[in-house]
Length: 460
Image 1: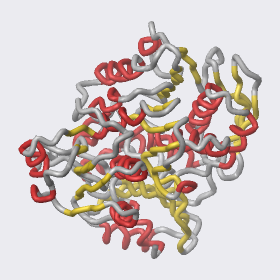
Image 2: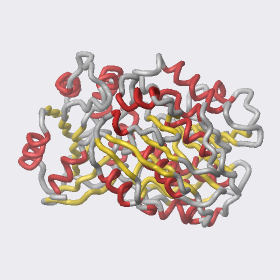
Image 3: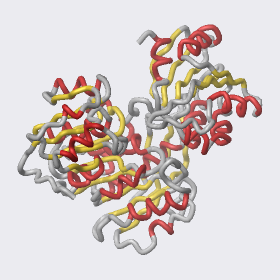
């Protein structure tokens, strides 16, 4: 594997520079004095931001974008062998790294690198930990998978002590990382277009845990079934947290909720004193995220006062139960949930908030995920009073596998829930304008572009 010497800036070219993670890495290298350029399919707010910082971005896929003066290329996992730029890179003999390999090499430049993994909750938990690190004035470098308002984006370039990143299991990318502190929030079936089954996924997380050095620390959700299969024989310290198990190292007691569904609870800790935490994000799932974040802060020996204040200040990231506005008395919220467990957590939290009718406009994400979880999606979405489905967002997939949103609509209707399916966003928006009334709550949900529906209704 090509090794970058971060003390000797060179020319780096990113294929797919407009991605949320790729753009962040490009910015880190640009700030460090590297000559950074790249390409993406089309213009976006992310590419516009990179250009404003002085990074060259080209649009489309063309071999002419690749020039001999490039010292190293970085590729997203979506780049195929037939990509014209990738073929040009190989023809010119330019060394290349995957996004994950570059991220792993970056992590080794910091005194302490923190990697947050799990099927769900990575962005929220990474942002909670970021809030703590910022409150403690540690000057961290941050790479987050969503827009985190306090840093005005998804990246913050700081000092050389702390580096925090999300660690995604898809294509085993997190196995290229070098963390000192690892977090495993949950392990469930997902990305079944890559993994064979849940056992294959668990094996990947086990291999991630084995990356931690003897003087490192793994923080793991003790509610994961047979979590000791993941932790057995690890040389590092293992810390558990749980929503239900009082033998875990961290667990909550006396949970209560305010009128907006924000939890307040006592975080009980086996090796430290208990502490009362108040959150400004809704839902029981965020109690677990906060416990994991507190455990990280304790590993870093940060003050409890700092951690408590930071967790109280944290009010979420873009597209994670994000309040978008109110139109004609209808509250509009947007959420990134695209897995049945995430949908269940979001709708359960929403049901605790004041509303007349709870509407969920859901856009399934990828044909393979829809096929794998068709019945689970139906059950999770049935928590809403009324469901509206958009067509499946294919992302990287071209084979429909016989899946469509109309099939999911039929499943939901059989569960006794009012569910409609429309082919276009325009049809959905017109239907909502005619049927939503004052006091209703409308949640747009999914990992695609479904957020545009709520934004269009609000005139944003």
